[in-house]
Length: 342
Ligand SMILES: CSC[C@H]1O[C@H](OP(=O)(O)O)[C@H](O)[C@@H]1O
Image (cartoon, rainbow, N blue to C red):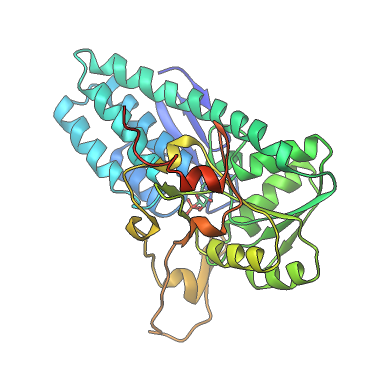
């Protein structure tokens, strides 16, 4: 397969490499994702993370495995194993549905490689189109709060919500970005803070608990977040903490936008109640672990609740900014996200 490079994925010498997002920003370690179990391990540990990127990494590995002579049956097993790596972000399932179709082709090797590369190119273009749709919604001088990480690290392109913010800054419309650190895995404090700093975009890091006071002090003009799955009624699953920001935004009358590619839509998921929410290990909450080692602050054997995502009801969302354009609450209420009846 041709060499390929995104911010956090690359293919060289027919090998898939991933940028370890758990080690960033202190260390920029490229790790091999040479087989199904290795990639599943990287995805589950969030060394590979971000709804679009998870789907792209799985698709690229399958294509490489096909090129390297893996049998159709073993490719099918690999696809099913990859599909179960994380349950919430629907991009993984949607991408692998496309790869499943390619696997059915007579020349499935060519079909898998072609589809995996198409998905990467498509995601790059979707990110650009999301930014095109989103930047007109940014008023000049905006101070924008964002949560988790939705930049180039999480996609094949400029990002989703952070792509809108980045392009809005390039257009001179973003005055400041408030970066929610995003406990427990700190995607905001580590990854978004790094991406914005690298871009020279003015920002300040805050703890998640500081967001309410900033809004009360009228320091936030808009909130932009990503999505892991958008249900047919417009409910959105996103990183834990998103729902509380949406409630605060409504109370403080601050616009709350969700930015995502259409590949994050799940038209067959009736509502947020039907979205599977990934439950994660206690150790992520009782302490912290990274390339520096590990520290635990909570008592031994304390019981922990650690859902990786929450659901924001459509009623709290000002707009869904997709690659196809801005979708309004009225359009969602009319069923624009429901299954298309031809
Ligand atoms: C464009 S990434 C979308 C989404 O994925 C992140 O979750 P995770 O870091 O667990 O992969 C976060 O919810 C982002 O908003």
